[in-house]
Length: 174
Image (cartoon, rainbow, N blue to C red):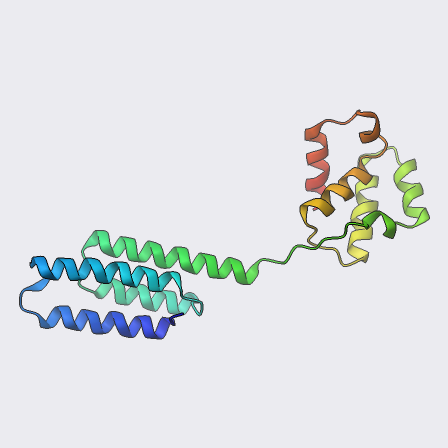
């Protein structure tokens, strides 16, 4: 894995190399070398793990100042933006939690309230409140389905609830 600092140094060295050659980027050999370097840099960008907003901005400035044509600059900037987005999402996404025995954690009063409630909002509140008590704040799909089925009782048991209604319940529990 490469670091942003090493990529920035590589870019600056490459820019200096291109500037030092009199033929410039119009020469066929230079065009081929730049195309190969472009692919190498894009692969390096894909492996960056230490990227943050400051480093992404600095790399973008180095790319913009370089000998790349407009299309190449756009490709490099787009790749850098995509990599930054992936890293940020990985850092901010919460792990999903699984609780395949969620119903075992509902107390007798919880069950009584779920079964006795006439409004769906009360059922959803009971199910969601118990989840918060268990620190179950980001349930995975299977756990969320179990929770939704409990909130949909007894309607789901008798086929009196549509798929769109069940989906709505899942969204409200989330």
